[in-house]
Length: 479
Image 1 (cartoon, rainbow, N blue to C red):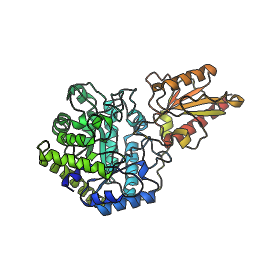
Image 2: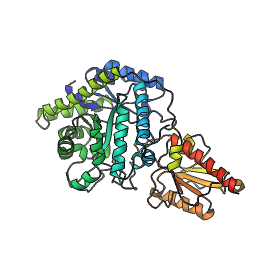
Image 3: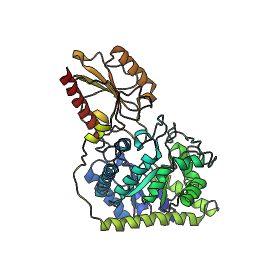
Image 4: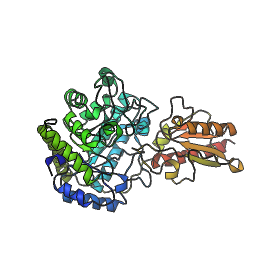
């Protein structure tokens, strides 16, 4: 095993540490990334992270726990946190910091020390299929304010933040898991908008920055950001002055390795200036062997400088040592499952004028395919315990609701799905009292969102259930 393992951060299959991964950790593997499939319970998760740290006391143990729709800790029940878009609409930076701090303490108790959050992309394109309600908002100043608060709150618990996806994934209409998005903006345009939250995050002391697999042809016409020395070196390191760990988004995504394979993408990302290579979700010993061999061969033939790899390993180890020391000085705060007041969410729900909610309702949820970052997780009213009727593509609407009940249709990003638009149009033709709720990021014209919640976590589902009950009681009082 060579020192190149000190730049690798793989995922793995199952709730226990595989023998092959334990051996690599003992030999200096940088760490691991945990996903929902690795988590069965809090006790099991703590046993898993303990085993990882026994194999390598300086392991970086990473996770995607953004709060809101993207959750690994609560993948079986839905997150109890308000997500970024809702936090941005509430626009209380102290509240945002409190959410991030709570996330941090949960991760500390679980034994995790690196969180791939917050998402600081500016969601300037409502057609974006992968960011949406993961973003604090559509304007640079708003996103920057809440970026600073989230980073500060999380890192106060001795869990490192990883702001993403540099230099900004908000102005895309393509999912980089599946293809290579193109953002055709100039450097000046990026400085005015996309880079502003990253500047704020660096000022707040973010310990890592995650790259994006997007092509910015006006900066580098040949390489996506993850593989671009111009973007990672000249822009992030030199111009913005970031001296922490640069983490790649998962290299198994099409935007990074679809044309070359992961081993070559790993070499290219190191050459570009990345330090910690997030490999994917269900990696194997054979895959890591191939990546390690490609890096070693690149060093041997001069394609990759040994000093560049040593620099990356040193940054990763320095972060791990700092977190170990810092966490030792900050006792873990014990707490029950987080609970936040529902009123701030209810107060900023976007409700069209003239909306009426009847006491008797039949609720239908439209089950569109979740993007890969979000994954399969209970969402919305179902996660909050409300009875719903799930409807999938090619399903018919239920028959006319019984006893004059109001049909309530709940979806996410309704405007982006043709079958959802058709179904909503049909329901409205059938009954003009139909209420349509969007728990994602709605279109600017709100055509398919009588009510927009800007998030679908369990917390938001509970807030929506409370709003429906309150509003229906108001309707009764008026009758």
